[in-house]
Amino acid sequence: MPDTMWVFNDKTKKFNANNLSQGAVLEFGKGKIAVFGEAAMFTAQLAGRNRFKAGINSEDASENYKLLLNIIHWLDKVK
Image (cartoon, rainbow, N blue to C red; front, side, top):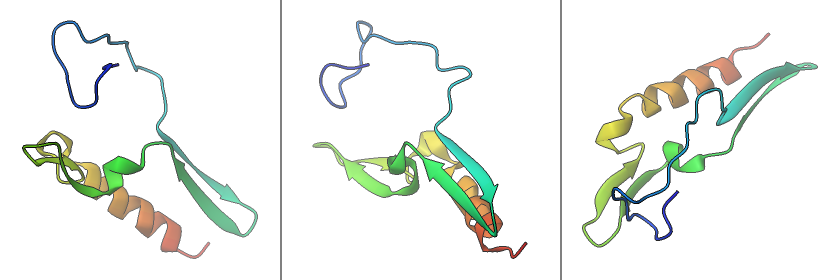
């Protein structure tokens, strides 16, 4: 929980995110819905002065594109 964007150090406050959700999927009526609270993981970004890769480009998030592709395929299948 940094007090300044993109500034992380030993004094940065942290909390355990186990059992927290960033998104949910649901079949509803004749359709499906996917809702996510963190849109950055599905975007390609270059952030900060050093233009480091963030979002789907981040080297620390190599599975994000697979998650997004799986969500799209789940949504596009007809029931």
